[in-house]
Image (cartoon, rainbow, N blue to C red):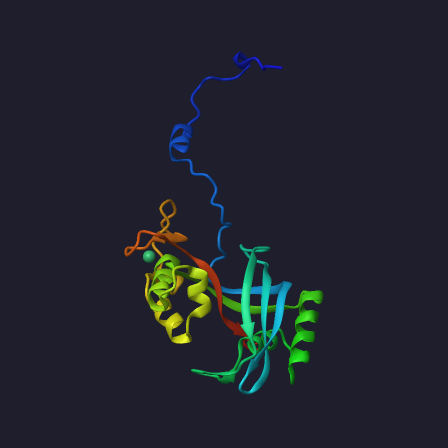
Length: 224
Ligand SMILES: [Zn+2]
């Protein structure tokens, strides 16, 4: 049933014309959490795979997190890739991504792959929280993929990736415009105190989109 419009005011609503003019559709991507230290917990273990290394079997996990508390409460961080292959860190001696994760969640000891997995299971089941520092990173995937096709001589991205060497992937990763940190992103067009989540690659004109990355897991004793 049509509603009688004469019942309603025709006085212009202040600011509406401008809002109408400047209206933007919602991004298909949910807004990224702010960079900095946040409290997280595992919501989903997507995958854990065994991988053979010269030092024996190691595992690689793909995990989803959620943020607990603060302005970004309940925001989801997907596809965090971690393994337990040790590397020499610049300031803390040997560690691995998974060791950083379980230590930041307060687990004192872990001695084998099975135990790593049982800790991950428990963290997921009990929503064990841990603190970590997030940052934004972005890279032009168009330039990256193009470089890899050139280096491998393969016409498709999939084949190029599958047939590439570590050195070729490193070289393609190095090419293409990138932003390594939140501060490297341009100002937000509407809210100058914030950063835009994407910018145009000056090489190819493609979109570089920010991704949220955990850059540091924080051991509980460091937490204030
Ligand atoms: Zn590009």
